[in-house]
Image (cartoon, rainbow, N blue to C red; front, top):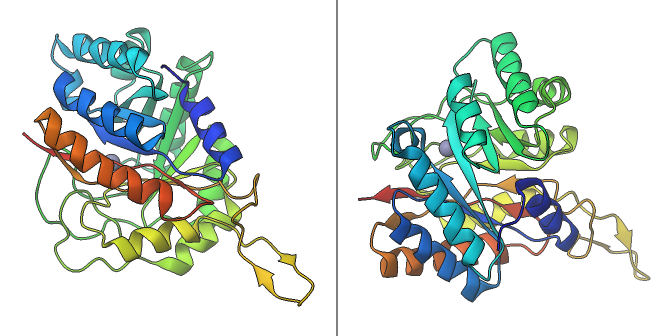
Length: 291
Ligand SMILES: [Zn+2]
């Protein structure tokens, strides 16, 4: 069933749970991802890359994914991923995308802010806008090893979210799209600082190469510690700590093949990691798809 991007995030926040998102180049892949979400009982975000959406048939793909989401028993929505062009953002919203990632991460700060503000304006009413500060290197469409891009500055991130009105913030903490040129070295203190200062769900792109331990740690780091002290004086983490628990949305990723059955199996594995790695954070999983 269709669910709004923002509603999906709120639902996850309330449950202190996580969500996954997967790039879908074909309807077959999308159906595989939706079947996995149904099996896992988890909501899911179907991502359309700009390269898939740019051709004249792009609107058809977006509509097809929306139709598949509508017919699924799992809550799902469709997001146009990484786009810096205002006309494309406007077109996708008209075509029924429920959310866009207005990606100004390659632009100077002020231009980045202006792009996201414009997208926020275009997305009225109801649609969601994700934004990116710092830059996550590589791309979902490119299976190549790259080094980390410019890291997200926590204080700047807080100001950025305030100025843009973004619903969700993609962060750069050493994560890259696709494969990692070297074993990933995520900047955990930076992630924790961002989470402390930023009050919207966070999104970690490009977890394709991240080991499960890092995924779990990333999800846990998205969860502010719940300072609940029991009778023994011990302080416990926030397994039942909404509304704090879901302030962070992460993007994990997996390689999802174009074959529906394989895509489904791989999406199940990623959704599992995303939703169960921690009971109290959000994860948004993103795939780099092998066609
Ligand atoms: Zn991405």
